[in-house]
Image (tube, rainbow, N blue to C red; front, side, top):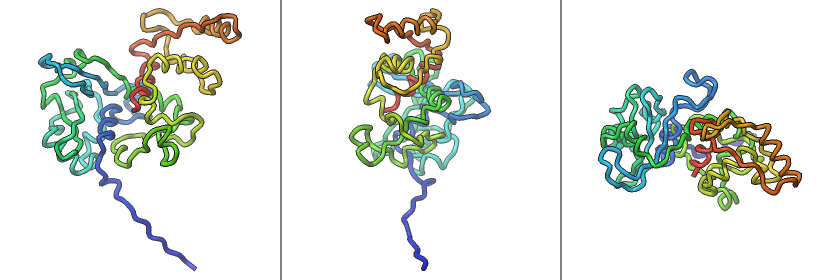
Length: 291
């Protein structure tokens, strides 16, 4: 006997991007995996997310705004280069009101994520609409996040082997935040959902814990903040110099830490602040950006 079951389906290629999907595309840029432009996964060819509180062209105060800077030559995400990625309505508004068709990878530029009167999210090419240049925005930024490069670190270091980025529609709602929607992933490659969960889901971790100091200690040596953690240390991502340009001596740090661990010292050694261009800073920026 044969039983035929008909299940409803959806055309994923026709799914419109959510606001979150647009933000992720502009944060992570094009592709975060092994590719010709970054074969050793060093976080190259990525945009910079910034927070602005003043107009970079006029200097006038504005509401806090996230902007996405693509230096000249940085590859655009698929949503800016393929018509069928954003969804028909989002694409139309991004083209007409956001003027994304005027952007080129060779020149680079600055992008914003906006929502129109009909609650349709869209991408605005602020270099065309507001005269914001990449250099001016970077200079006026209150904060800069290398979250795009950080996602490359997340992939390269195998963080997704133990952490998921996919809360389930179960009790996960209460602990890890809302499960994602289908339209949250338009243009994202790879999604890094993860296949196992030996540690907490991280999709909204930046909303649960936004402390850069805690994250810095956690990545340098997880046992500093969670004594029974099975997470490996990522102190090697700091490189040879800290944020002040001082040499980092991991052997000396370990000696002090072991004295603290066996009770000989009351306080653990201080964790060096990552340099602004270090892989540690990139990875921490990525995790803090997960909200």
